[in-house]
Structure formats: structure tokens, C-alpha cells
Image 1 (tube, one colour):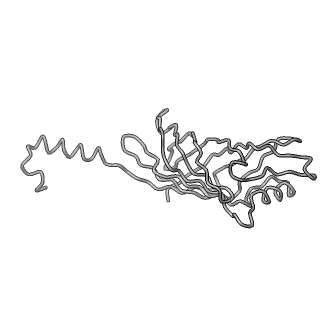
Image 2 (image 1 turned 90 degrees about the horizontal axis):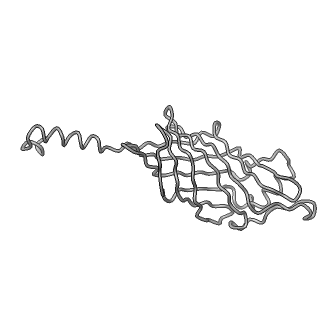
Image 3 (image 1 turned 90 degrees about the vertical axis):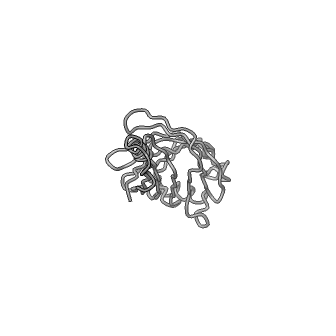
Length: 195
């Protein structure tokens, strides 16, 4: 306390309160695959379709003071954990994703653009991240709901992308008579728990 010995007691108290109030708490979280959900939806010339993601991993770093700040989000999906319930469709999906060479699909947050508080513990988050599919990385904008609850962080949202933007040829079936639409929607509800 030598640093503050010449300060009046009132000024010392104000300084200590200011320093304490300015403390930022950083917390690391790990994605819980068993309670997280991700679905990919698309269209074809025959019918709409969807695929569930069975294996994903990720991490989140959150800073909290008077406000919150998302410092990092990373996500990894095992390409062959995408399951439609139809073996032929899964085979076509893995061929399009070149899973022999590219085992994983990854996402990494590169910047936060806005965080808006909606209510206690609930926020709207907007940011930009890098999505990598079959070795091709593109920046995508994201908008999601973030909820801090019982020591967990719950994230939900959806993004629409085009497969061809990542060098993925939309799958076909029956000698090309059934064609998949280029646009897909990725919906997710992810649970992050303290490490």
C-alpha cells in the first residue's frame, strides 16, 4: 500500500472501488456434444432434406465485467458424423465433402461487431468468423442469441451459405436426375460448460 500512502482516505477508498469495479473476469467454456444440436437443411429437385451433426467439439472464451465480451469461439465438426438416416445420401454427402482428405469442418470467430443486452443474462451477438470446408476458408457474418445460465453459455442461431462458395459441388443422385440446391441452412443450439 506504499503507493497510496500519501492519498487521503476518501481518495484511497474511491481508487480501490474503481480498481475492483474495473476487474474483468475471463472464463473458458467447452462445448458439450451430448446437449448440443446442429442441423443442416437444404432442397433438391425431389424434396427438401436435412442432415444432423452427431459429433462436434468447440470452445468459448467469455469476458464479464459490467458488460460481456466474447473473446473467442471455435467449433469443429467431424465430416463423417453428418447423418441423414439414409446411407446413400450420406455416401453422396461424404463424396461432396471429400471426407477421405478433409476429416473436419471448422469455424473460428475473428471479430465481434456488436453485443446487445436483451434481458438479464440474454444477449444478441453479431460477429464475423472463418468457416473452412474442404480446405476452403471464407468469412461469414453471424447473428446469434447468447444466454448465460447456471454456469453455462447457451448459443443458438442459423446461417445460410452456398456450397459452391466453398468449392463443394452440390450432390446429385440417380445419374444426375435428382439435383441438390446450392443453398443450405445451418441451425444450431450449442451448450458450453465451464472446463
